[in-house]
Image (cartoon, rainbow, N blue to C red; front, side):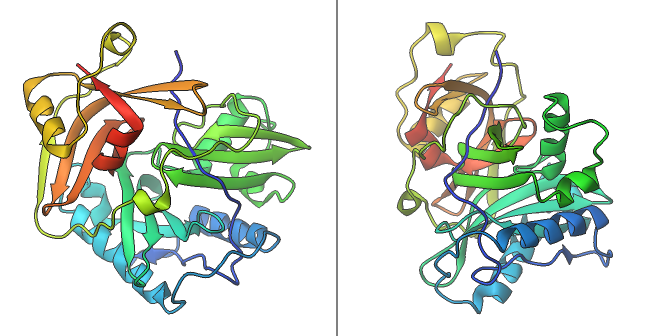
Length: 318
């Protein structure tokens, strides 16, 4: 079977309404040329999109940069995030009406992780999702390789030419952690691809999210992280999520108990009206303070998604 993931409704936001944050460097590095190519292309593409309602306070650009730098520094102290210590980052808007941004971190020319950030009503920001590995969410590098492999673009097209090509529209659609896709138009044909793996999805139209923005919690990584980890495994080696019954888990404490009691827990969610079943290995959880809880899933790298939202969207099997 093929693993899939998810997406959201939207096109790029006009740079006159929101903004594409310049590449930041915490280690004195110069701008990454690949990231610069992407940022320029995205800003140009955004100019033709519909203007989104601006975030509550346009002065929050500086606050957004400060928040991202703060989260990067905090997470860089955690196991598995060592590459973030010297990583620089660039950001991109997620779509009209979402008031959200994606962030990709790069260390010595290699992508090493990502964040998904949303604006809060009070002008601050919340960290909705983050992850590590060489396949960050909404990586143009992953998208380019997938389109070449699917023979949707010629292998003779370079990465830089692909990014700059205005005839190929590349929209990042994000509504929640498990509803994130690329919407790509090539020669009049529209394709949807998984925002994490780049796999082609069996979609004909923009799917609807499972969670509303109002259901997302404000998170800021306060306090000391408590992390519980487990080895990864292939959820396709055993199929309890097909033959068995899910555990009765709806609360954070119930999940923590089950994680301690059972090995190889599998998280399963149905996406796009049941067109895709996504099973992922649960490799841990991370808790910040009393209320910031993240489920850690293995999806071509570790993904840290809000635990409460994940429980509402899927089931867990032992």
